[in-house]
Length: 67
Image (tube, rainbow, N blue to C red; front, side):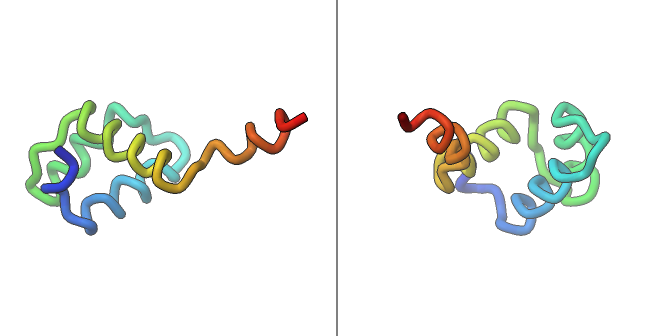
Protein backbone atom coordinates (compact mmCIF):
# COMPACT_ATOMS: atom_id res chain seq x y z
CA UNK A 1 0.00 0.00 0.00
CA UNK A 2 2.67 2.51 0.94
CA UNK A 3 5.23 1.13 -1.51
CA UNK A 4 3.69 3.08 -4.39
CA UNK A 5 4.13 6.40 -2.54
CA UNK A 6 7.27 8.29 -3.55
CA UNK A 7 9.85 9.45 -1.03
CA UNK A 8 9.10 13.06 -1.93
CA UNK A 9 5.44 12.61 -0.96
CA UNK A 10 6.43 10.89 2.29
CA UNK A 11 8.77 13.76 3.17
CA UNK A 12 5.96 16.22 2.52
CA UNK A 13 3.64 14.25 4.81
CA UNK A 14 6.24 14.27 7.59
CA UNK A 15 6.85 18.00 7.07
CA UNK A 16 3.12 18.74 7.32
CA UNK A 17 2.76 16.62 10.46
CA UNK A 18 5.42 18.74 12.15
CA UNK A 19 3.64 22.02 11.47
CA UNK A 20 1.49 23.11 14.43
CA UNK A 21 -2.16 23.67 13.57
CA UNK A 22 -2.35 21.23 10.65
CA UNK A 23 -4.62 18.29 11.39
CA UNK A 24 -3.78 14.84 10.05
CA UNK A 25 -7.26 14.68 8.51
CA UNK A 26 -6.33 17.65 6.27
CA UNK A 27 -2.99 16.26 5.05
CA UNK A 28 -4.38 14.03 2.26
CA UNK A 29 -6.17 17.02 0.68
CA UNK A 30 -3.04 19.16 0.79
CA UNK A 31 -0.75 16.47 -0.60
CA UNK A 32 -3.22 15.39 -3.29
CA UNK A 33 -3.53 18.98 -4.51
CA UNK A 34 0.24 19.53 -4.73
CA UNK A 35 1.42 16.12 -5.95
CA UNK A 36 -1.64 14.83 -7.84
CA UNK A 37 -1.83 11.65 -5.79
CA UNK A 38 -4.82 9.74 -4.48
CA UNK A 39 -4.02 9.60 -0.79
CA UNK A 40 -6.67 9.16 1.83
CA UNK A 41 -6.60 9.29 5.63
CA UNK A 42 -5.94 5.54 5.97
CA UNK A 43 -2.89 5.63 3.68
CA UNK A 44 -1.43 8.60 5.55
CA UNK A 45 -1.93 6.83 8.88
CA UNK A 46 -0.32 3.66 7.46
CA UNK A 47 2.73 5.66 6.33
CA UNK A 48 3.03 7.31 9.75
CA UNK A 49 2.61 4.02 11.63
CA UNK A 50 5.25 2.30 9.47
CA UNK A 51 7.67 5.13 10.21
CA UNK A 52 6.83 4.92 13.91
CA UNK A 53 7.59 1.19 13.99
CA UNK A 54 10.68 1.46 11.77
CA UNK A 55 12.41 4.03 13.95
CA UNK A 56 11.11 2.77 17.31
CA UNK A 57 9.72 6.13 18.39
CA UNK A 58 8.37 4.53 21.57
CA UNK A 59 11.79 4.96 23.16
CA UNK A 60 10.63 7.48 25.79
CA UNK A 61 8.15 5.02 27.23
CA UNK A 62 10.82 2.35 27.47
CA UNK A 63 13.11 4.71 29.39
CA UNK A 64 10.58 5.62 32.05
CA UNK A 65 9.18 2.11 32.50
CA UNK A 66 12.28 -0.06 32.46
CA UNK A 67 12.40 -0.67 36.24
